Length: 156
Image 1 (cartoon, helix red, strand yellow):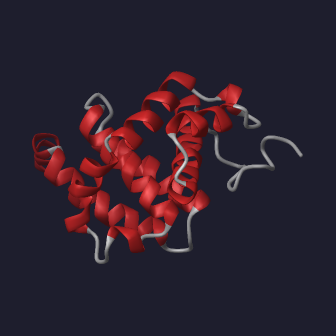
Image 2 (spheres, one colour):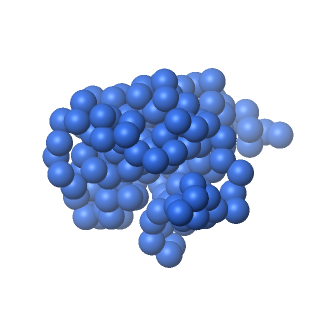
Image 3 (tube, one colour):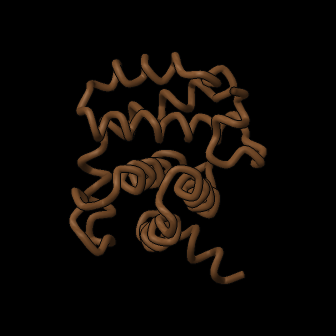
């Protein structure tokens, strides 16, 4: 099995940063389901096939950061979801953690890129219409966390 055939959407051209997000999503999924400590999750993911093509530093930052700040991150998007956070699918939950973390901690990444990456992750790994849900929640969250950036973008 080649690396391309192992991916849910093999035709996409994936950058090392996108691959880092994919692996962070897999790590958060593992963490959410198995409640393992972050170091165990990171070690498991780093051993995965294809990890060498990912931005390892960004992966580590994203995964440790999302886990460490998970309570605060959930608090930011919980008012924007139509159900309890515990009722979200693990993929949607993990993608929302990644998106919220990037909004808060990586202002150098445009908010539209954060949303687009989250939508692509959900399309690749989530349920049929999960990407629409994630898009709606992160769109509202961007207006809350990146107020000036979103307002400036809407003026154009």
